[in-house]
Image (tube, rainbow, N blue to C red; front, side, top):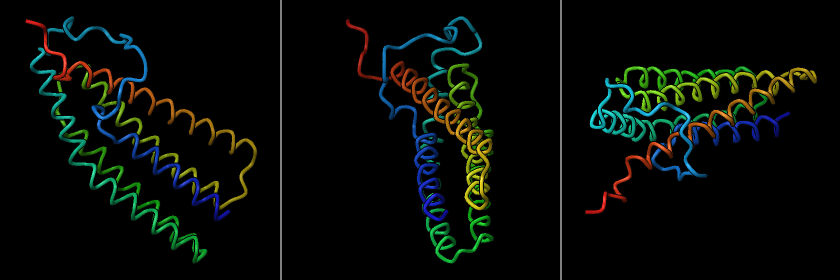
Length: 189
């Protein structure tokens, strides 16, 4: 049971960190597909506004990186100490504290005002991944401290897969948006 808690916490750290990475840091994994209507179709967000919104999101990601890494390190050390002490209350408290940091991160993201539909989509995906990470962590605690049934294990696995799919979509869409704003390919003149 203790190994399960440590391994799963490490997996969640990786998923959470991936979810919070800057979209611009992710290379496009395949040929870009257009799954959303072109931003030009909506007149409320000009290319300049979209670029400004994208820059706001990148800045938010940069500001959150240190806090997220610190929260993950604290959770990992708190969980390790709690598991070694075999103290379930400390495990619950560590997860509760970590989930509070996720809630704070989501609240911070909510305050970020963006008008561009494409950037708003990335922002919303970030929120979804953060919320799923938090929910999965609570489930993980329940599975680690109790003897899970086969149904609970399957439900947990389904949530893991849902989070992985959400992270993959966020990475792809973020990479597509980053590619759009990449300064590397100016128009030939």
